[in-house]
Length: 239
Image 1 (cartoon, rainbow, N blue to C red):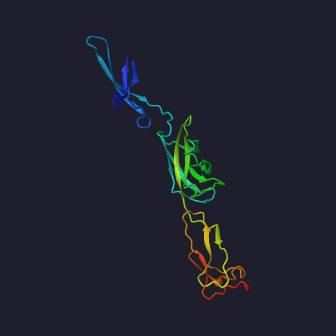
Image 2 (spheres, rainbow, N blue to C red; image 1 turned 180 degrees about the vertical axis):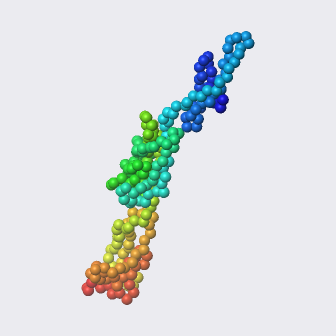
Image 3 (cartoon, one colour; image 1 turned 90 degrees about the vertical axis):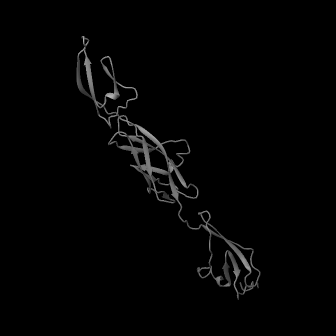
């Protein structure tokens, strides 16, 4: 009689009771104990235990999990961003995953990725850049292997991890230096261009080709200023 509470008897029909949960995964067979009473006087009874099978039907996935430690900016095509798994009431279900149209915000970065099996990967030609887009917004749909296949959509995110990127330019700003300027006179100032916001810089004189570094010995760098070096002769006529 374990499942008597799940049913009602109306006439000669056994029916699902209001509020009862009939679930194949947790209870594939209903066990009922039923008594019949005849219309004699007194009415006499007979009791029998019966069973009925609960038939499995395909149920939709109930959750999608995206596991990611983030993706380094500038990662190459096919780099794995994260993996997908799903929750489904049906035991032993298998799943396929696809990018799905969302609300325009939660799918903003769908075009930057591919899904291969259960892996979300960087798409060929995609630019993963921390400075312009530190968080990838993806909308993903899972479909189970039932007939028909049922779906569940979920918006997920992946952090873009900042990496140090090389400087792209060095700018020397100078109005020239008067000949015979004294030591410490400022020849010009230096600045630099770097994709990484908030970077700070140090500057140094370095050997060059022998031509482009010919006057390094006449100057020194202090902070971002190029100055006349002590003992240097700044002479228009000879240089």
